[in-house]
Image (cartoon, rainbow, N blue to C red):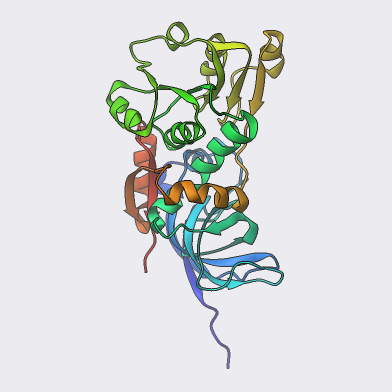
Length: 315
């Protein structure tokens, strides 16, 4: 007698295109390889890069079919050989390489950290990419701390609002660019100076910056150079072309680093204390049912989201 293999549900796309290409499908449940866990996903974050991959703008996954999703939170259902420190029943969160829009996913155990008990799965799933990007940019690279002046563009966005809080938690002075209707939100998160980019040229209003985090791209990189002190650091965390060459930055006596967010359970474990005591709060703009992934992408493409979008998986 043949036992049917357990199934999992996933949001899959078979072609590039708009949000309508996202389809709910069933497929065999994966099994964890050595060093991996099988995660029962409770919530999955919707990242800006997901929209680019879905449309074909970013070829990160190659050609369809594939399942999007990097940020997940859930419960460990099984562990592969060689996994230590995690066991079935543990609640964890992390950033994975792909496949998070699914009820079950396998990924390296090293990508996960224990979920803070004070954080629900929705907010935990909203955290990994934002926390890792901000941490890798501002702590690992910029070494932001007391006396440091940090400029953050798109400060009310998914990564930006976490970067503001992380820089403040390290004791930095934070200058943030955002629309005026986001200033109250950012002030509550600790931003020291606020620039409404729709009415003020930040290149004229901001000076003597030690480290600037560009989350927009285009002409923002070149323009931001004018805000830096001599020897200052420009960090680009945008996918694709940062809008300038490192040689151009160095020729002006400044430094340039492009950050590509890497999964790290170790870093998330270090950040967990800040999340647990709410020194870093991840704002969720909207939490939508799993089957409404297309709607979540529509909201993301509408722009000007405050914080993060999350998909909630069925029980």
